[in-house]
Length: 207
Image 1 (tube, one colour):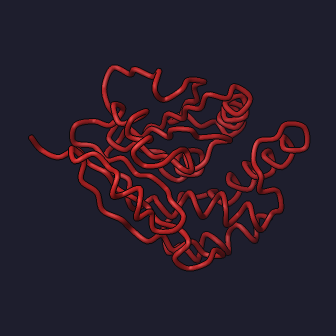
Image 2 (cartoon, one colour):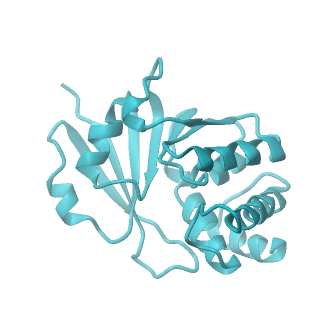
């Protein structure tokens, strides 16, 4: 798997810290091991995990802004864990309402010695940090209007909310509140069908 991950990383055209492939391989190895006992993710074959978990997470890396990043509804730690591995200078918080998934996240944090990330079992609508985050990311959590309803308060006034989507979410975009502006980026994920992934970047409008 290590060699396949390195080949996949090379396709992204990004620069990575030393030992990135080994750490990502350890993450997927643990995911596969836990998946045998606890249902964490639907993707279970190695090739599918590389494209559907690792690359699908890392492709959003150029869109991140600021130092403090929040991953809402992280599940088994995607996209937060891969991003934290390759962005050690940024601080990541990963939240999910399902305790067993955060247990896995905390296990990986300890296993890899990740000092820039922490996981918490909490629902986004119940989370009240002291200040907003520079970037909030969410992958397959809810429709865009609902997403802003439950997690919009977690975005800093100058921050960005990045929502992962499959096909272009035209109807969801029409339903966004007029207090938010948006732009849409096509995400080119190696191994996945072109045009099958989009990122919606949402920002508060200035008064």
